[in-house]
Image 1 (cartoon, rainbow, N blue to C red):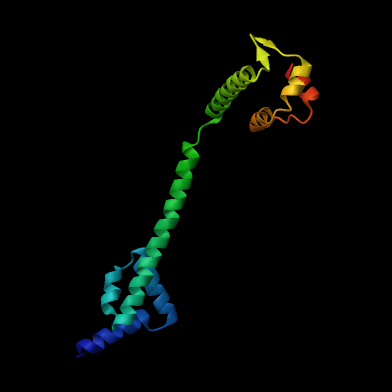
Image 2: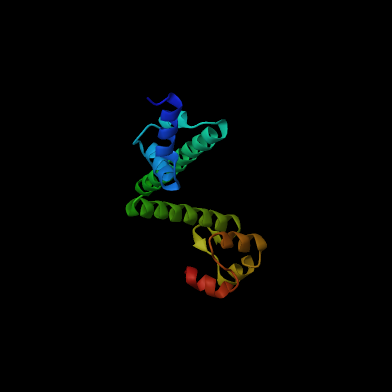
Length: 153
């Protein structure tokens, strides 16, 4: 009969004898057709085992990374707030911004005791750098104070 070495060599050649067979063996070992340790133990030499183990490690990490990315993307899509929640958030932010703007106007003399100031006082206030900077945080340009005053009425 055949010796153990001849059997091992035959098995090695059957699984790693050509590029096509090696590719198929690698595919089978990462897809669960055969446990990768079976092929690992078949290989001779430290370098061949190291390369094979690296391939298995790299493939598994890559697949896990891709699957995790798909899962996280789907989870983020379903976790995003719906239109009603976003509309409510926008409305609440607008109310908060309006409250901040009114407070700022009172602090800077742009409104007093619930009544608005006149156009001349508004124009003067719009030349103040702090007022210009604050209005800019809302996306409001004070470059044309008369037009801005008219639009706020």
